[in-house]
Image (cartoon, rainbow, N blue to C red; front, top):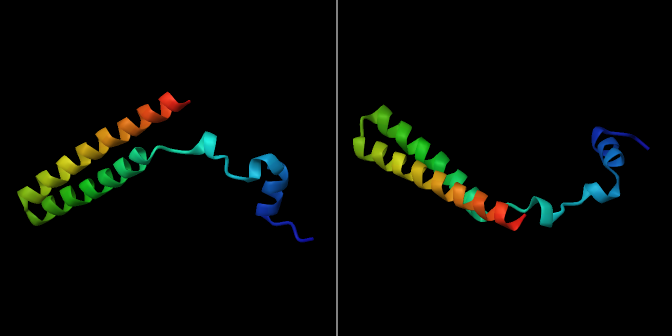
Length: 82
């Protein structure tokens, strides 16, 4: 049998650690969506700065702020769950 990094890693972790354990590693959807909104907001903000479009820049800042809030809500829900 050819041992690759993956097979060695799996052998090291053992059978209980190779599968995804949803109860421990599940992340609230608000954290994921919040991170997406932060990235989109940052992109809009930068694009607005580069093009000189103040309304797009402000829209990006608002979306980034909303993403931060949404992410914090997700963190709080995760902490309440554990």
